[in-house]
Each structure stands twice: as structure tokens, then as C-alpha cells.
Image (cartoon, rainbow, N blue to C red):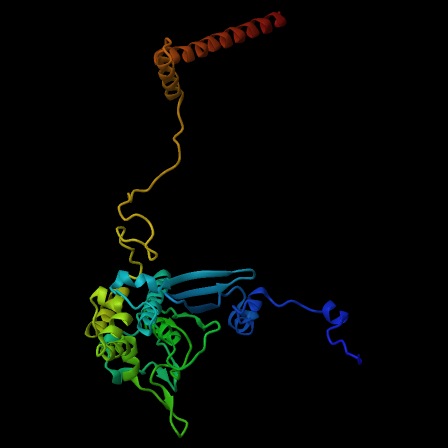
Length: 351
């Protein structure tokens, strides 16, 4: 056997440093996280906020985080499974739902900090008026001159997701900005944006509006309606909820208005949770498992009742009270007699 060079020798393993746990699990990009949370030294103890967007198979999570030395603090959160409270009956993971979730989070943050940034109401704007908030392709939020307060500023945290053109990440971003949160970004990655042959950015506001109000879903529904079997398989929940292709735009328009009206709307107590667990007929009254403290009279009654059940003669409650009061009176008399005796002894000493 020829000579084999040992590459990973003892010196290698002695100096080996294990990576962070979430890096080993491929959950956190620490290169990006470091740049999102580091704060300038001349801004000591000033929070730097992140607008965190995450997607699961059945839900969308939007949160505002600030970082401390040893942990992260969640300032506010919004989830796509909360959208049924505002009239969205189905489709909780598409681009339109991401926009609603971002809008819901922004309204909650502004309500919490009492800021007056209402943002743009997309249903009331023509597509020609879209894009006025961008200057040289960069987002620019107008200041509130009445209150003199700056808008709530956060940085977009996409995690390990791909930032491709038309991604749902940017739907949540757009919803948050329209809700009044200042998130620095450009309009290069929204649906309909592309670069022409000359290298100039072309923005199609019609496509962007269609995605925000579920137009792309409506187009796909109309396409599949040609094959009834495929349509029922793909849109069974829409069929059960009674939502058609022509109903989507109104559903999302009403949802946007409801979110702006009350971002902290509670779930109907009669409704089950998202996972459909529990009994819908259960009592909704709050239960208390604390036992009240018993007084002496209550304990005496309990003892008397036990004695009666045993067939023995019981002691009345008044007898208990008299027994308590009698020793107290005797103690007072004894105390007075003791004081008188002390006074007599003092007089004798003086004489």
C-alpha cells in the first residue's frame, strides 16, 4: 500500500469549531442576520426592528422583532389563519392573503404605538396613481406633519427564502407598507416588473393590482372550469365556501376595509380554532380552580355536619362563638389584675 496523506489529522480536530445549531439545521442565515440586527454605537439601546415573513404549507406568519443581547422580542404578529375574521373564507397562502396579513400587522403596529400613518388604500386608487410613493425606484414614505412623529421603520427579513420576482414575500411587504410601516425597498421584484433590452425597469401596475385582489387565482379558476373534475379537485374549499371567480375581488376589498377598521378583532367565541379541536357546545364561562379560604364558623359547620352524619350530638355554632369569646374576657381580667398588683408593689417599694 502506498503512502496516504492524512488531511484531517489530530491538529485539525483539535482546532475544529462547531457551527451554530440553527446554522447546522439550515434554519438561520447568520451572515444576513448580523447585518439586520447590528446597531451603531452612537445609537446605543435604540431598537432595530425586523419585519419577518415566513410561509408554511397552510399559513403565513408576519412578525415585528427587535433583538436583545440574548434573545429576540416579538413586538407584534399577524397570521393568515386570522383572516376569516375579516371575511376571507379560503385561500390563506396565496399572494392576496400575504398582502392582507402584512396589512393586518401594519395596522396593529400603528395602533399599538398610536401612529397616524394610514398608507395607501389600493381599492380607491387607479392604476395610473400607483407608484407615486417610489422615487427613482426606491420607496419613500411621506412624513406626518400633524403629529410630527416618524413612521415605524423596519427591515425586511426573508430568512432563507428566494427573493424572486413576484414572490409572496413582496405581497406581505406591499401590504405592510400600505398599512403605514416604512420598510426600505425598491419596486424591482413586484409582479409585472421586468427589465427591458435597454436595461431599464418596466413596472406593470395592472399585474400588481391583479395579484393583490386575487385576479390570478380567478383566472386559474376560470381556466379549470372547462374540466369540472379538475376544478372540483383543485378548488373544493372555494366551492364549499360559495366563492366563485367573480367574488374574489370584492372579498379582498371588503377584507382590506375590515382590517383597517378593527385590526384587533376577536374570534367569535362559538367558532372552533384553526385546528378544529374542542367541543363547540362547551361552556364559555371562565373556570376558577382556586378554593376559597374557610373561616372558623364555616369549619365549625362542617364539623357539626360530620358529627350529625355519624349519629353523634353536635355543638351549635353559637357555642363555638361563646367558647371563643369567654377565654378572651378572662384574659383581659387577668391582665387588669396583674397590672394592679404591679402598681401595689411599686407603692410598697416607695414607702
